[in-house]
Amino acid sequence: MIKKVVWPVTCITDMLKKNTTRKTQEWDMKANIDRTPVKSRRRSWLAGAALALGSISTMAMGASTLESVKERGYLQCGVNTGLPGFSAPDEKGNWSGLDVEVCQSIAAAVLGDKSKVRYTPLTSKERFTALQSGEIDVLSRNTTWTQTRDNTLGLNFAGVAYYDGQGFMVSKSLGVRSVRELDGAAVCVLSGSTTELNLADYFRQHGMEYEAVNYDTADQTVKGFESGRCDVLTADQSGLYGQRLRLAKPASAVVLPEVISKEPLGPVVRQGDDQWLNIVKWTLFALVNAEELDINSMNVDKMQKSTNPAVARFMGSDGPGGKGLGLSDDWAYQIVKQVGNYGEIFERNVGDKSPLKVARGINSLWNQGGILYAPPFR
Figure (tube, rainbow, N blue to C red):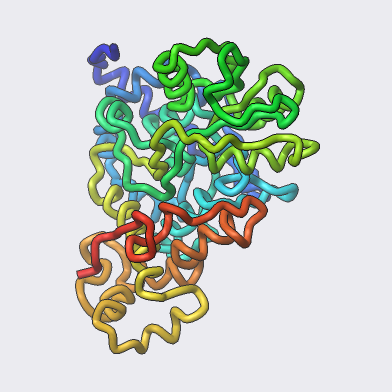
């Protein structure tokens, strides 16, 4: 149970000063990675302080998140330390992935330039503290939307960027075809994740035993699995396909067919700043609406001349534009022009145009057999 903590005003002031100071530290511009010393931004006591400060930190600093982002000239985005298809740096430090392109879409909408993003790689244990403390503006890191996370951390989920489910990967040499054959297995799993909780629930429900082998990063779980430290690796099923590619012999492992949970993954923001929540939320809606309206990065300029009223509202030439969000009227146009629509983002990062080759499935539009659905621009 999380106990409510009452912090003296002087304590809150000191903590805000420390947080502001951290923003002035050096950046590794080449890799776009926050190089703030790990220990200074990972101390566990920040979690308790953040719960008390979560909803008031932005107001106490005298600026909304939107104002802060515009003033500094870039978006600070929390991402995974390295998960193929979602967020991972290449050898030159350039980040790519579905979650990364969500960050870029927000930057395009807010700043008119998708490149104005700096990435903070975070483990499962670090991610919420980083957002609560104000270290990042938004968390876009394959994070599952749950009741507890939505109601007790001082955070808001802005929507779903990818519908996933937890699965299992085993070595083909084990001859296992079903999760139900894993009684007594050693399982590599990420610490501090819903994956860890789902694992315990599933095995307890089916009267099975297991040994949890916990790691802090996805890379560590893959190395543990490959070294034989565990018999099976469990994670969101989409992530398993990416992790399999990191094995020396990818064909030696197989992803089992069962999916044991619902994992709606999406970006997260701090509570207490409804304008910023709406911006991130409608950025996701813009990506989905663009695909539904057949607007993509290749035809977006041509579509500005469309006689379809829905397209005109999307482009900002008619309807509410960006006034309610505090953005320019062409904010949605900038997203599609610079990044693309949801379908484009999906295919090049996890779909048929990527090494993962994940089928759209339920991540298809509602009128194409999936469950992706966005409110209209009206």
